[in-house]
Image 1 (cartoon, rainbow, N blue to C red):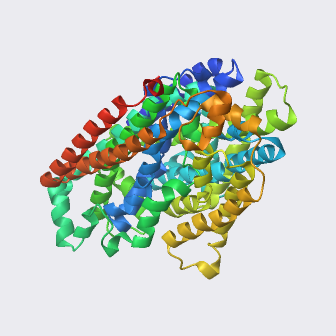
Image 2 (tube, rainbow, N blue to C red):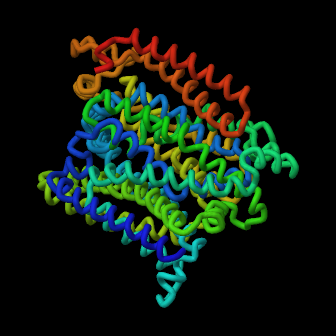
Image 3 (tube, rainbow, N blue to C red):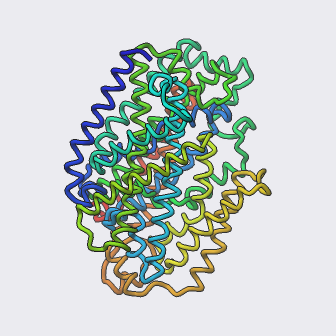
Length: 579
């Protein structure tokens, strides 16, 4: 890192903070402006923000380590979420926009009634805002800490500071993000997300572009892997042992995870973008744009860099650092600073969202719901900023003690498995009640935590997910059937507000006289076609990058057929659902 690199980084940080301060004036206007952008986000900004949020500094490091240990097929650990994310486009995006909530847990007291609904809302708000959100932020901070340590930046910045250097790194990161996110509100977050996404993607392409020639390009990567007996690292499917992905775990990813995980109907940060969108159509378009950017566009720069790092640094004790080592060895002055700035951009886009999102739970679902129901907008904004400080402090603590990004990622999947089925069914079946959702959430988390006891240390991850999902169901299904359903008044009010499709609301349709605004059967067909389209496009790009022309042509043909069928399917649907 030389003076030019530091100048580039300084320019980026200054510009980001200035933009955050500029938008702080808009965020301070009202509670709705600070947390849901006044419900005025255009689809392209909301979708890009969703993509930027899911691409943090931990992601390229995580993928680099994943490919080094398991090959390309190891990415099914996160590719499997594409099933959830495509279904989110057709089944849930418009429903969430129609709900007009501020947070997803606010829906608890719209869908359910009485004390159980209030208990559910408060419990979920606390669990998501504090332990889950802070652990998620913590592993993003862990990745940023690894970047700073690997680049040797701390030797320049903090050589004279006392105590443990890791602690000072985490504290420095925390203060930086807190200043930015605490001032800006959601408009500041999404506006800078757009810039940060472009910068982060350019950074990944630069690393790949400068390192590839030294290994003979993509052809050289393939030849070297074959020579060293590592050709199976290029497999897209986990058929070989190198992927360390048993068939049980693979089937759990694609057959269980999408409906059992706590983000099955969208997930809090995505929901925040949906409810902040201008219209229902904007929410659905934003969801499609996110899927294309996240899976089709961003996947392959990471994987190419990971394959190059595997060849050049096969003996790294921590393979996640291979990405950083390539930056140091191959990027010229100025561009190294730009890519470091792209890491900061990726980190800030994710963590600033998590700060704003977590604070929204604390303000909307805890403070304003239980302590100060009549708090002014100004008071709620300031409480949100104070909550941001607390959240960052807890996340920094998690980052200080964590070590391995991939391990934390899998732990987050495990403890979030269980309530997903209830979260889906509550939209489409009147009989689901608050006790069912509460039981599913608590049971899933407890079963997952128990599976990490030493007695179960050798358990296959797929078995862990299956036991958690079905064990949770064995508790929440009886809990639902043994407790009374929600009142007719509550059910009619929820149906009238969101008007979901399917047979589960026949009685409410008759009572209210309102027809559904969703054709559930058509949306399920569209979702299935969308999943085929997304994976076909993703694999087509991958095979094109790797020079597998025949496979790429076949995947593009499948994508073309899926696009045609999807277009015809949507054109035959009820026009009112497209408003």
